[in-house]
Length: 82
Image (cartoon, rainbow, N blue to C red; front, top):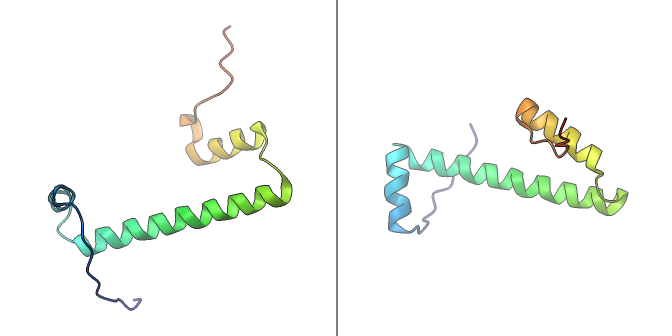
């Protein structure tokens, strides 16, 4: 188990009320949200660096990435009428 540090955060009252409806463990919920945001930020940084080094992603690369992430749920840009 990783070490923890106790901190105080200030949130709008309406957010706290909704948060308490969602979970009994606010600390864990917030820790998971922060971890998700950190991963999101780091991934964005990695993608920007990749594009700086290799150029913009092609439509094909983006479509492949969406397919891998979302599977059959990925929206298709090719909406050719048959």
